[in-house]
Every structure is written in C-alpha cells, then in structure tokens.
Amino acid sequence: MKFVSHIPLSQSLSRSARVSAIFAVSLLTTACLMVPPTAYSQTQDSSQTTTAPDNSGQNKAPGSTADQQSDRHSDMAITRKIRKSIIADRSLSTYAHNVKIITRHGKVTLKGPVKSEDEKQTIASKAAAVVGSADMVNNQLTVDTSGN
Image 1: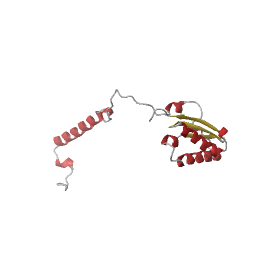
Image 2: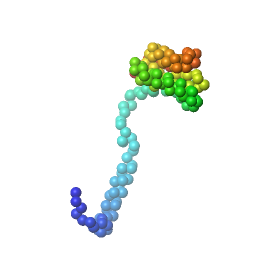
Image 3: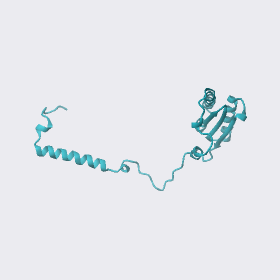
Image 4: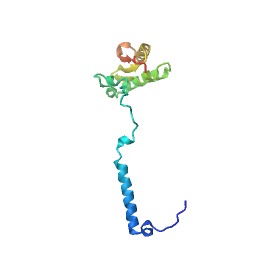
C-alpha cells in the first residue's frame, strides 16, 4: 500500500474532524478496557466437577518435602543417581518417573503417586541399590487407584 499524502494528520483534517477522530479512538479504547476478563476466558459448564491433582494432599502433608533436599554434594549425587535409574526404566509410568526423591544425610524419602504396587517396589529397590540398604529408604509412595 502506498501513502497518498505526506501531509501530517494534523494538517490534512479540519479541527472538528481531528476532535471526532480522537474521540472515536478514545471511545473504542475505553470500550475495550471495560470488557470483563471473563468474556475472554473459555466457558465452563458449572455442572462439571474438577478433580485435584493426584498428590495435592501429599504436598500439604507434614514430613519431607522437596525444598528440604540437602544441598550437600553427596546427597545431591544420591538423588541424581536414583532419578537417572528411574528415568532409564521405560517400563515405569510417567507418574513413577516424576516421584519426589528427597535425600538428607544419606537417607532417602520417596513420595508421590505411582500406577501399581510393582512400580512402588521397583522404585524403592532402585533407591535402596543406590544408597546400599533398604533401611535407608523411607518409601511413602502411594498407588493411584483412580485409573487416570
């Protein structure tokens, strides 16, 4: 598209036309700002029920949490080795790959949902293999029975 004129807007329109244009732009801007944010969101059927994430209750429960992970090199190395071992096992579910692993002073706490009792035991065994003893593993994993 090519410009028809190089004359600035202020010189090409009469004063009343400029005022009308400014008023129209102001009115349009105000109207856009007054639209409630809900008008942009997707509508949801109020009869639908939403379910909380599988481990939301556990996240609020007292005990070891991920932010209590020790920053000692040895503890971080243990956590890293356990995580790599779990991720390398492709037979495990995504839930199992995402369990929380908290290591403090060589002791490991496992938290989060898994799909089966077998996964729960497999992860605990992998952690025990890394730390050298099942006594050093606190297995708080839960089996998700919701079928999701």
